[in-house]
Length: 404
Image 1: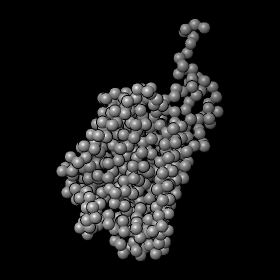
Image 2: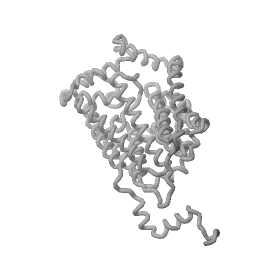
Image 3: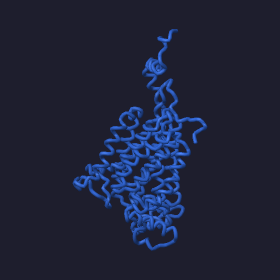
Image 4: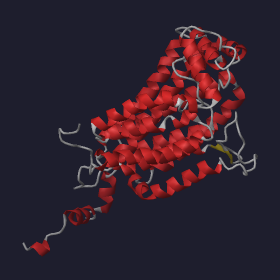
């Protein structure tokens, strides 16, 4: 056989894949996969959210059901096309996402279109739903970071490690200007998790964590007054000082009262009047977890956390079976983002973190949040469904022992 007659490996694989197109396409789908576990967990959490919202405000429950239905349709639409095609559209998604983040900050935009809430300009009124660009940015960020991290190991060099963080600061800064501190805090931990799973050098990650620990206290003077006040209230609360409970610490105190009142088995039907007289702000939204703990007790709270853990675990399981780098990083990014978001939400409701405006995935009331979380599940299912092409090179992040 002459050298000229030898086909390149990629062309040979392409020709072999095309010999039996219909059979190949059928084999390309992995119907039994952990993506369905993530979808089932999301459905269980969504149903729990509707029940909890019924306890707080029954008039909002039908809307939440409608938001869930829209989210399911969005997840299905996202899961249908091969996720590998999304990689080429990432730059366009990034430009559109940043454009929306800038749009809500323009003072000249009329208030009927961008209406401030609690002093934050973070929603665009679309009539049937209020679009939150920060929620859209979370999905686009995961796709962009997954496209950036490649199996060639460039992110293991110092410059390749630093660039993703510099680029991440752009959407984070825009979200902080709204201001939306809660959502902004999710981006960097998610990126760190993706870098760690992508094989970034341990010394780079350790240096980053140490730098963040040192810089965090230095950022305190630059926070807005109400943000500093919430940190002060948390510190006072941990010290047993109750002087902020009727002021900036009111929401946190009311939330912990409801969590404690639920006991082990919860108050069931008796929870509704207690929650009503408790006057917990945003009980249907950011503070939905105390409602669950009050009505269904420790059992309900543990079940909620268990379903969230199953969802995150299904995302990581999907990452473990993905053979191309882009798919693996998408699954890791979704699992990390939803996991960190759930942790921050629950921690702030039980007095472990300052109160920030961040929702509990699938459970809190809201159209943008519900749509975003289901789109993320759709991405995980998309990755889990796709088997790698025959003769494809294993595109995982594997490096030798000199990973430090």
